Length: 431
Image (tube, rainbow, N blue to C red; front, side, top):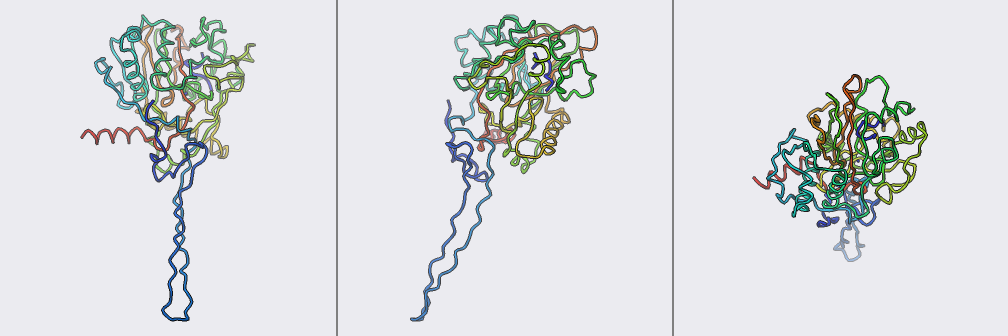
């Protein structure tokens, strides 16, 4: 998938089976792949004895009661994965901010993230920030001039840790955009997002997913969530732009929560039974075309190793921080929907992107204004795409440093709800 410029370079109380809605059937949390069908036993009528002395006993036939319909979720994890949604403490309520759109995006003014990292109550502040990012999808900070690469990495890791990610999940090392590249910096855990480097690496790639140097007619192929091709993909990404073109280069984000909410309930339930294959062979092709090797060692988690950039994840997943469902199978890193025909898979994947691009009110567009402007987003629930409009003209290059935290293996908790359902319940509770 043609990486956008961004990607070149997706303990609380455990919920048990009692929480799972009856319409979904009972799910064995100890066996993630098994949905246990609910059935009512056949009702056996008692024997009826005729009053005549010689009359034989008459036994009524058993009345058969049909089993309730069971929907088998695509991926239910071990019970230890399922957590109650996290609640805000109010620690950052005093930070001046505004909602960029009703659905997605919040911008904070005059917050120095370097100072937040060293504050006495930094854990409390960062935990609430992580929850806010997961709820709003993406948050923005201006001119973070005090934030070094090392502090940016610390921020990414702590956001994940304080919101409950597994201990084995660290910071991602990109298979291409790492310290081995000419413009890669000195740290494998910082992906340098460079338009100049992208032109060098991807112009000659044979993959149709990469469009550097190709006449632009279809910008929608740039949408993606970060590194969903890994078995353990990202929770939070942090991008800090250090070089800006004179104009252009905006980034767009879109809400996977809202995408899910715009699908009819019967279709939601169907999609929840599906998994997809997430893959990015284009990186292998680009490496071969340029004569270098992919980073095949441990890429931030023990599961993320090797040359095969491929994983199977649910089509609909639950964000453990919010407990909200999101459409996950969107964009460049999704190869196919599993267990359906090729035509059905292509139609579904095209439809997801069509819903995204046809509904601009579930998107937010961010204009980078200053060096060290910074965005943090939750890859479990949003997609993003850079705008390469500055490439055709003398507007300068675009360069940023990105730190990518790894989260949990994606799953669908049948007891989770949609964003709109959760907000409606919250509104009713406070009415």
